[in-house]
Length: 457
Image (cartoon, rainbow, N blue to C red):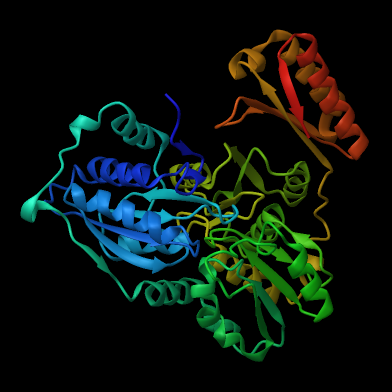
């Protein structure tokens, strides 16, 4: 059975891959699975979306699916993904849905699901929803007459989310600071909230890519196209820049010199800040297996421990929740502050990074000077059978030899793609040449074993 859900919800080219029919099916199955324990005739499910031209199309289809099985669809309009995660609990809703393809270009869209507690769904629940859609549609009873759900709009979503961020981040503490900030809104969801939220920063606050027209989301802007922000920060002598992605659950930063500070850099800065203030519970930062080797070396130097999870901020939060850790995230900029949120929140991340910088009275470049990011080479190897290739004894030996050769000066990671017939071979080492040489050595063994279909850089 092909998976509908990847590491961050269902995703595909809107209308042709992620079809209206599939959106309706997801609405029906999600409502059935996520609300069956509530016992309510008309459970309430909130629905947010980003600024893509296709979002309203999918909103209509998904809402029809929800209402067709008796659920009420409460439409929030354009909001950040973390707003849905927060508001589902604030509004005492039975589930939440975000329509967004995050950092992807405009032709894509996606559907992310949240429980009544505002958590992204564990794999087991997504698999149950998938099974209903693909194999057991007859189990879902359609309603008629007065049993159908209602579709209505809520006008207070952005205001309530902004107030929540101000309260949990102490945003008022930064009023009147003598700093200049820039925010790249990616022509996405943060355009609906950022100006109102950061208005207290006054004339030192600039916004770019904050005029969405339905077609320009992530178009040469935002966290996946950081160059525009880097140039703006340097040209206008800003102290720091922040770039969000299309649904504002990611944030990357740019220091006063125009250098990128990615999610690993943010985890390093704020982890150190929390430890300095004796607020780093369990003395631990949660990362994914894709965090840079340099981050681990830098955390070791500070005496900070770390855990590694699978790729995806939901896995980071599952670890944080299970073990009581308070900060975690991904290199891509999904940062979770466990005291305030249970998913990545780009806007909250920007505020907390400002907090650390202003509190320590140091420019951002100084806060990252002891973090040395190692060169990385990643190649995707298309194979016929992922498990066979991953478990091949010769491939495993090659990986072990690289690991021994690198010692404590680097690392190798061989992992399966969650959605493609691909193995990803990644090496981090002191030089790019060492990375390239060791990645190629493992791929050569895979090729000799007849496992390789195609290699992509």
